[in-house]
Length: 288
Image (cartoon, rainbow, N blue to C red; front, side):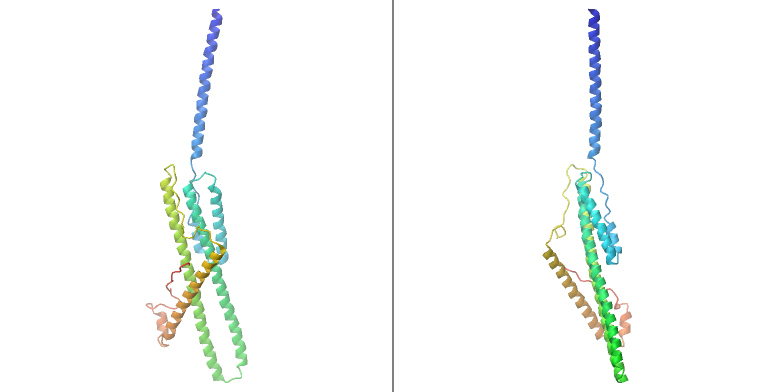
């Protein structure tokens, strides 16, 4: 009887030790699981450089190169949009990067379109100059039999007109470039200021449990417009650019015409007055 009693006591003690060991193991597993969950909650930093696309846009001079930058900007935006639903990144920083990337895509589209217009205008001027040169050669062949003095006078007049037209074409191209660069620079500056503001909000909200609302511009950047509305806006901007270019060219040509021949050379090289290739103040463009 005593032996049996001792055996039962030993079995009870062994059962208690097994129960305590199981409890400790469960606690350790719960601690490891809790640490694992805490590691999963930690958010990753958004890998986005806001100056990369802007620097590339500033360097490009050809429409083809601008198109390549546009494709690169679209690719970065697509990657950011893919990361949006993963929950692995700081939502405020990710939203700010997405907004800035969209603005850079629109800036790249604008510069690509503007460079195409400039190249087409330059080609048209070259074609016109070539056609006029060929026409002038044909006219010279027909006028060979005329009086020498009359032929010289007419050639001098045509040369003067050709020089004036080339000056006007050059000024038109320069003015259009200045207006386009100012528009592009303004849009990129707006995008950078907006990105800095959103990143500031993201930094202030990183320590709290709730994220602040990211500033989303309502000046028409994120608002979807219909195709008719976009065409109307671009047509209005183009009309204003044409009008301003014509006004500035007419003013410069009028000033050059009113200037006496004897003082023309001095006025062209005067540091105070500026030359024909100097900077002309660019006028603000109001998109209607």
